[in-house]
Length: 116
Image (cartoon, rainbow, N blue to C red; front, side):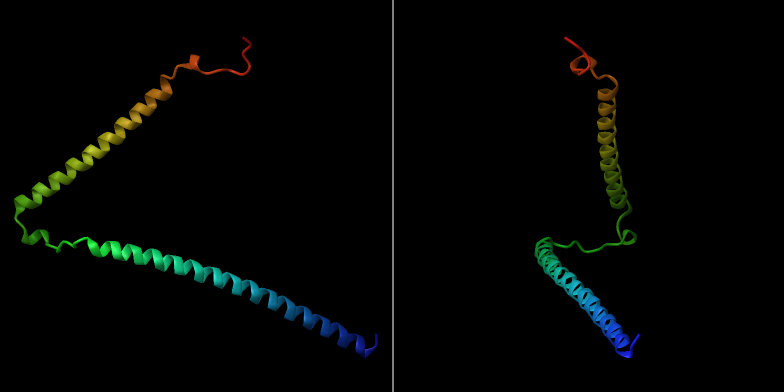
């Protein structure tokens, strides 16, 4: 092989390398632009949430140690009752779903293999 063929081969490989790097750079630039657009959307949503959060008054923190024991106990009991009510509602919903599954009327279904 003559010497100039090696120069052409290496020059071709160099052009291929530059082309691949340019392709990767272009794809990375496109992904960066998409990420920036999504970041702008996120910032707008965060602004809305921040504005909505400013309207709600923040209750000052009071340690349970500095409060009356009866108040702490009453609040804890109220939380327990709310939780027990939510658990009972979920349980009743599960029981009702189970009843629908186990006591379904099979006569209401139309079987495609059945000839009438």
